[in-house]
Image (cartoon, helix red, strand yellow):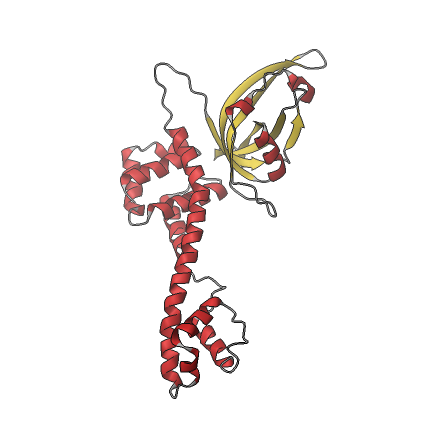
Length: 312
């Protein structure tokens, strides 16, 4: 992991804990010295997992430990692929019924086919055949495990890449020519189940409240949080309503909106909310195969129909 990759990772952490970047180049050098010998993808994945579960700023030593644990976990063999001893034991039990036997794993049948079933049955030295089988099967098993691990790593990379891009894109926003920028990135949990309604102009709108932890504790030593109203429009509103529930952790990007309306009692009310442009499902709801990233088209953010008063 080089200094550039370390700086990008610190930018991701900085979206939640801005104080982490206070040391500038010195911070980058220190973190690179601690994490420099580890692969950047593994470090980024471990960091994002910590950000999704921790309520405090992750330290470099903690990230290093989490990265090593992740690497070790990825190197553990997959349970559903039999070990070489288990495979050989199955071969010995079924020497006389090869044609009729349904092997517990296709790798066992493939190894037997490579060696030759009759060569095993007719062998006068089963120890030699055992060694031959071990060599062939272990080679097949290693390739199978590598394939499985590669698929899992690819799925995790795709799953987290959206979060990485979301944080980096927000961090790299620049103001040019006096242009005003209104962008917000939030990570938190739903306070209650989202509500989906349809406006008089037949536009779907999903509203929910996101609890976002503050990066410090209150006077009583307890963690404090801000409760922020979120609005999602269009098809994404329906998807969020069907996919999310109380306690679900989200990472989202959007713009701040402050609006007013006249309540039924005749008084003027002010509302502050975030109109979501993109929502990332950090935790997937059981039994629901919704996509982990919900892009929201700009045309879905049109709430100018004046129908909000009916929902206040």
